[in-house]
Image 1 (cartoon, rainbow, N blue to C red):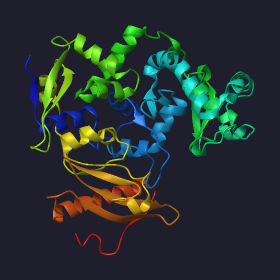
Image 2 (tube, rainbow, N blue to C red; image 1 turned 180 degrees about the horizontal axis):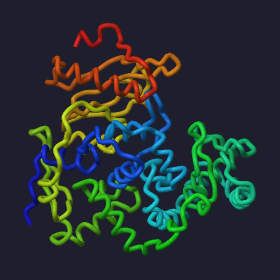
Image 3 (cartoon, rainbow, N blue to C red; image 1 turned 45 degrees about the vertical axis):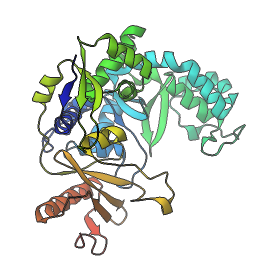
Image 4 (cartoon, one colour; image 1 turned 30 degrees about the horizontal axis):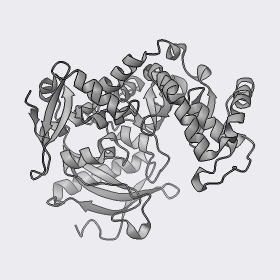
Length: 402
């Protein structure tokens, strides 16, 4: 079959729609609306860096301006509609998906045990049984609550004491769950005390697990390679995703030829759902205006897709030596309608109540006219309020020089 042609503009509009970035940003929603948004996205990555606000909060606020962090805490820590675990990284995930993760725990336990032995040494294994007994009898614990002992083989950042390693291993394999965070430190309890009973029903069989992982990823991606399908949740291998897609070609899955934003670049041959044409037609136009994206936003995290569809070359430079950074430690992409038009460097000085905006880099061909400048100032005022700051401070003349 001839691959279905998809323009870069069509591809951008579909992805923005699927990832909640075409929703009306002013529409007020409560916890039900927030849960619906996260379920549509699949998960929201969690990260500790707080130059302005933490990644998970920034991701959700970029989609709905009425979002506040307390809404996420309600769903995670009281309603238990979400749980925290691992996709490609630490994430919050709808609890309705927890039976799928139980199959993941079963699949990965042996490999994870071997990996932890290589990274941390074998001492943690003797801690797991007593640690489960301790938590069962005395309730939730943090890593800092445990006796600290020197690591057997200190390895820099991986120099965890045995209790910390045991906690992480028991969480990664499903025995424990994160019941809450205190100053962003995970507090662990037995999974069955944290999550509702329904989370432990109906664990999928292996074939159904692979089908769910691939089908639900493609639903949210719109189109993708086997590697992108597998990497969305990080539940299955690229080989499994390729086999799943090939087995359904011509029925549930079609091939698409997705054009690049750069007209000189070649289209990519990708898998898509069989109803791709209908989905492209139904996709909503993104709202007009400027939005700030987290470096960990699902729109941004796959750099190859971002570059192909948006023509935007981005990397986060937190692990780059300061002298070698092109832009800055933690620089935010700017989204305007369906285009990424630049990036901005800023930090929140909360004790002083000031959002310090240090620099802005616009993409080639983008100009800061009067209308765009006003939109940028309004965006920064919103971000300032969201970050609990009272005012925005601009680096000397940086705005007027553009």
